[in-house]
Amino acid sequence: MPTYWSIASASFRQYSTYRMATAAGVFTNTIFGFIRASILFAAITTAGGELSGYTIAQAATYVWLGQALLAPIEAFGTREVSQRVHQGEVAVDLLRPTSFLGLYYAKKLGRSAFLLLGRGIPPLVIGALVTGLALPEDPLSYALGAFSLLAAITLAFLADMMVNLAAFWLIETRGLTVVYTAVMNLLSGFLIPILWFPDWLLGIARATPFPSMIQTPIDTLSGRITPLEALPLLGVQAGWVLVLAVAAHLMLRLGVRSMEVQGG
Image (cartoon, rainbow, N blue to C red; front, side):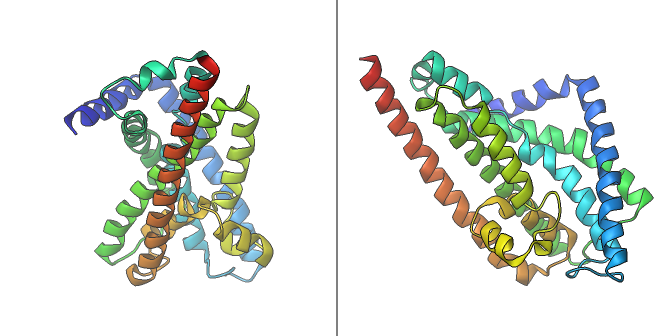
């Protein structure tokens, strides 16, 4: 455990050195937050002040929490995995005393922690000052929200790792990454709340782990759902973490076996 903590800490420090990139990320997050907020406000105003349970204040909270959480959740840090697979260097990685998935997960946690503090919180504060936020009164919502956020980061890591482990069987994974990112942004509820989806698309979204990456932590942290209502959603998150962890582990084992057969 101390080894993984050191790796996570090193990853945090590494990303904290990119000051200009952090400042640019804060600026971009804030601008896109205002654009998203204006679009959602217009839709709610046109609908008469409420749309699928969202008021103006709830929509503002949804937008700014989404902007704060997107970078730490979506931040891709496993791109080097596909490169190392193609170059055969993954064989060396597997000989290290640390777990392959554990190593990159520790890096993900360190990176996400910095991105939340450095690029996520500032736009959230700006949004709170300009549009206001509707935050929960029950302290339990914050505790459950923290757990939900960790689960969301874990899910995003595992899904992204699976995309990159596909390099064992694909010559190029960039196209798959583009498709994954587009689908994730849509079905996770980042662009608009999934409750605004038509029934057929809502059903598809709920059959995937993507809402557990964005929609669930936002709903839990914002207090739009009560702690009692959040518990089943946290259970869904935990279930998806288990499924994707097993799937990623199997992909790694099968990929290594395939590489050994081809490489002799």
